[in-house]
Image (cartoon, rainbow, N blue to C red; front, side, top):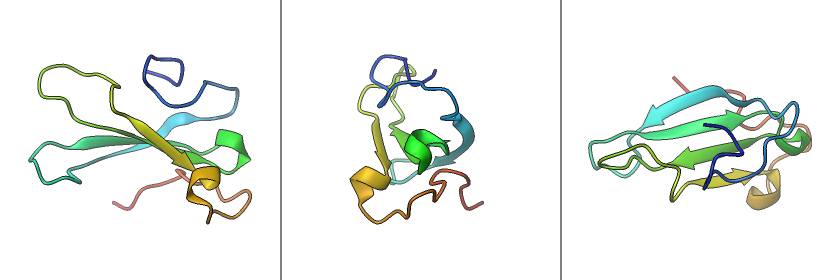
Length: 86
């Protein structure tokens, strides 16, 4: 899976570093973990992609991406997605 995979937000670009850091978290309480993938170099500020956990098969359908431009609060060069709390 990369940023050129269908339904994955964004487009793969050199130095995005998509997936360099990942985290599995059950954020909706359904007992299944969702995948969060960092893209620390995305548009120089970084970004995070969130993928829902499907019941039957891996898919990027329903995934969302966010970064400095969508959050509006990320400082330039902040490296959003560089790490996740363990």
